[in-house]
Image 1 (cartoon, one colour):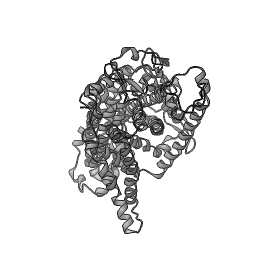
Image 2 (image 1 turned 30 degrees about the vertical axis):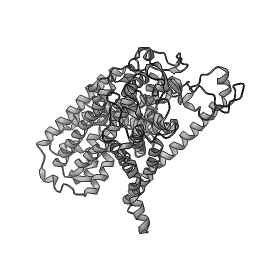
Image 3 (image 1 turned 90 degrees about the vertical axis):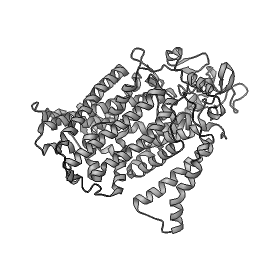
Image 4 (image 1 turned 135 degrees about the horizontal axis):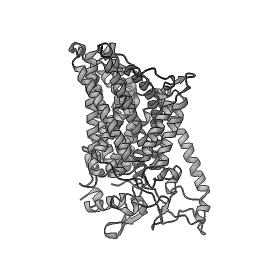
Length: 614
């Protein structure tokens, strides 16, 4: 017996029908056209990515110039024990990756966190989480393109290729404004490559990622001959607390696996290839980071590491000047691949939001020849180009990361609800879990207390009162074999993901939280404004015979069929359905069951729109 008492054959049928993995007709449908059921269908992206291409996407998106710079900052903070910081943050990333793997194989379509949050919590939470993540991606792309210009100048100097033109480096104007020509040109080049085709971008990424990994391995091999074990003593100079604190800093070195989930609609076999690619790429990145940190702290005492260019300066002291040119080349290639994959992932999220009707339908169009979301890809290139050309984006870098943590924690919570048989009850426990964990963690971070022993004890024990009723394995059912990848040890793994992401979020600066609430205020105002305009246009849409997803009329519709649309008809029904999300949602409230019989379609709407299932 399968999920919710349904036989496994039922879920396999729903899986095939919902995602149209074997349907050539829907995959080739034109965008913005209505099918026989009166709902809008969009073109699909071309499924052309295999296991190794997905793995290279994950490695290329994670291993960037950070391996040549962030490792120095982390090693200075935790000493040689920074290796355990990378391992601990890698464990957190692995927990998030397991949750991503199941959600990506359940819903193999573009949209990632927006899609997963949409089908679980609804439209507005999905918009809040995904736009926040896109802001992080946009600013990060501008920051990476600016850093590329600096690495390029450094490479030309060490390679001895003649005088370096002054226009290659950014020209400062004020503290906030500075002009750069190389950064927007790099973004433009990457955008053109990605618009040309996913397979073209995957081939370029494979070449650049292979070169980047080769440079890192060469640097580690050369550094082994100059390692002095006495530099590793003491191994924990800052204590164990510094190790865990540094893990929050280096956690963002593993964000590449989100790119694999972003490409689920272009994966040839999502059920088999995506989970393997996510876990293999993550393990590869952990090994590379640990090797670099061990070599770096063995060559140079941790308190003497140059934070700006740790590896380059370490080899400069050994008289190996040519290695500096190789390291600079690795930084150039690393930034190029990270930027390429970041832009690739952004476009798929914009595509998913546009399919739902929250953004102009033009962003949901697939180019008929290249089979790429060209309009969404162009937008992903234009936004960071505008930032990188005129602004010193480094000043905005401390506003990042909150979007990534929020997205990862939300995916873990979404998986928990997808598995739960008591969804409303589980949701209430999750809502209570956030403050129950955040408050004692904040008190520990800032070394504060209320001064009342009983109250302090209650605060510290509050997570247990929420976790105990949440960690009941009998309340969570695994999907049948062959339907999707099954995350192991549910509910322990997704609950651990939620708690650990709360821990990472607590360690972020206050300015990041201020940016989060300001952005959410703007999104809420946009949502209310668009909803209000949609309600006002209700009469016109009804006169034109606009289709509805539900067959029954809203309660407030007048006898002549006109009147304002009910609140249940939100933005998700602008295209006569929920775009591409779940595909089963296009079947209406009552879809076709097994053997063509009418039956309840459990993939029709967000889980929390219905009653609690016991």
